Amino acid sequence: MLELTDLHVEYEMEDGGSVKAVNGVSISLEEDKILGLIGESGSGKSTLAKAIIRLLAKNGHVPEGEIDYKGTDLTELSDRAFRKEMRWDEISMVPQNAMNGFDPVYTVGDQIVQAIRTHEDVSKADARERARELFEQLGIDPGRIDDYPHQFSGGMAQRAMIALALCLDPSLIIADEPTTALDVVIQDRILQTLRDLQTEFQSSIILITHDISVVSDICDDIAVMYGGRVVEHADVGTIIKEPRHPYTLGLRNAFPDIEEDDQDLISIPGTPPDLVDLEEGCGFAPRCPFATDECWDVTPEPTEYDDGHIVECHRADEQELLTEKAKQKETWMDDETDAALQVEEAND
Ligand SMILES: Nc1ncnc2c1ncn2[C@@H]1O[C@H](COP(=O)(O)OP(=O)(O)OP(=O)(O)O)[C@@H](O)[C@H]1O
Image (cartoon, rainbow, N blue to C red; front, side, top):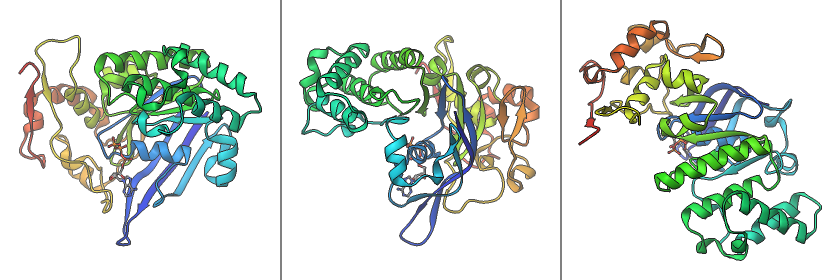
């Protein structure tokens, strides 16, 4: 249903330079699937999402690439046509912080009713009924429909935001770190609700997060972003159990596995690349313990392994060796990698 081809997104800066926040991304999302978009802060996840729903900051634009949504290239649509035909009806978004998504001066119910009536010719009473039903489905007491946003707890506001995103029955929902501000138990419940609703509404979801353990439970596919590119993309089982990219292997080390005791959490040394002065070569090479001269000099092309497992790494063929070495702390402590390593004992 959604196919991005060689998508680039840039932010113009006052000094005349530009931040290449998304730098040639090609991925696809099938109908009724949840795609997890993971990567460190600054890897371009939100930018990619906002480019799809056309909510980029004023200084952002798409200089190159296609966003094919059900056969329409969204980059070719006028702003007016996009607002009328696409945003909210077809593609909606749950933002990082729900409180910012609601207008504090109107009740939550009024805002959902207004969203429905702006796009559909229905009576106020019918729209209100739909909002009440959505509240119920999301586990919010429908009696709270006339509350103002500040009267909701963080978890409830986030659920109400999901109700708003679902109220026009869109085919694609983009959820940008929808639960980061919430505690783990509520986070888990909201993600499960999202999964249940996705099955019921038969919509597709792009779920953005920096936490690989969050996505493993509810996603079908995962795309790993690094430095504005998708460096690995596959079904969730493959990404969790058989990744090939050293960055994905590193991400796996950095989050605890709930099934294992006594683990060392090893973070990836160094910092993400400068997206203003992008250099030739693999963007991860300065932090990669396995980088060779070729990695520094030549940007790797996407290569497909198995069915739909796409990796951008010159050494992706050496999966067994990389996997074994990546498990060892010493690998990430090697002085030959550019950066300092921080090792945290999981059970400290
Ligand atoms: N309006 C802007 N102007 C200039 N640079 C920007 C702007 N918005 C984002 N950036 C830069 O674009 C890059 C990608 O940012 P983006 O927010 O998409 O990353 P992210 O992976 O979503 O990070 P996070 O998890 O922190 O939200 C970063 O280097 C960021 O500083």
